Image 1 (tube, rainbow, N blue to C red):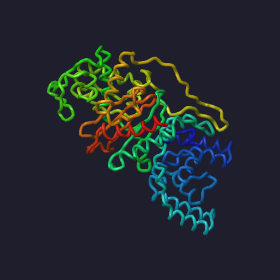
Image 2: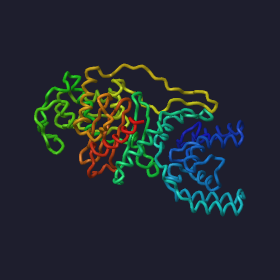
Image 3: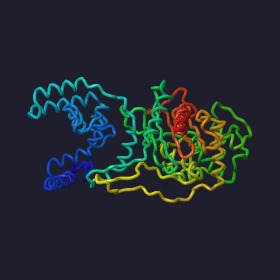
Length: 461
């Protein structure tokens, strides 16, 4: 408990000495029940569960008082190495350790022979309920990693989050529906509102199989969704959506970027070029505006990843997280105001005293009105007539502000769609963790369709 509340996991003699002194002090001011209570209310039990109440509800749909002996042994087993030893991520290993705990309890005469036999029998026959393996666990883990260590001096905290359980449910349903025949690929989804509040988050198809959050932790090539920044740089230079530019083969000091399927349309408008996601037009614009200006726009809209002025910059060949890329698109939906991504509204102690409350701040738009108007025209055209058409639903009409962009990387290793409708922004990534080619994968296919299913339900709520 001393380590959990006052220290960290640093392996050093100095930390052990500090731990000893804190422990001695705690034992003079707290009794054993208080110590175990404080510990159990903070301990990590794996699968995104912090605290005994969360763990018992998540794993067994019970309160701590309702636990049977074998269930308590399972939870005790996970404390040794909660990420690895929990009943969802490694059931067999966890059950073996729980069996050792039951054995030890029997030898210490804490349980009778009959109780031991019954508990061990139930443990052996335990079937793991995998039906709740996603839920909001990726989000819960993300929030707690960002907040829990800041409030270790408070006995118990109650965190009110931004997550919308209805939206979260629709996110999971959409991914399951669109990828039901594709067990070979992973997916991640982030749903924000225009304030930056996270309303839904899926970091992978199964938290049971992997706790790695692909929405926040994974850095992947964004492909053509990155072209947003190139077109913003061009608009800032004075171009507009209806200016013409050449969609023709290009040679840049021996480098010859190509359009998808090697198709070229000749002289077209910026609007059409964005709609069909022309690669050569994006590179032409990049060289006209300057690569540093493209990077400047990415940074301006909140991209923190390290970007280099390489010639393939505008084709989205440098890695970025889904959450920061989605937040950049949120700035377009919010009228140019760059949102602050957050998942917590308030934090209170056990007596209801508010110890943290998120205050919204007034900020000026980072995009002038003319540029904002033009980029929205481009994003809408992508959904109306372009590569993003699979994302459109009949509920998206001219009374609603909407737009979006697809992205597919070389050899179909990553597929993206990021779009907005009214006050919601949804980012979707699909691909493989090992970064290998995926057959029949494109931003206009699976990610766009996942977006469509989510936004269709959200607009009809």
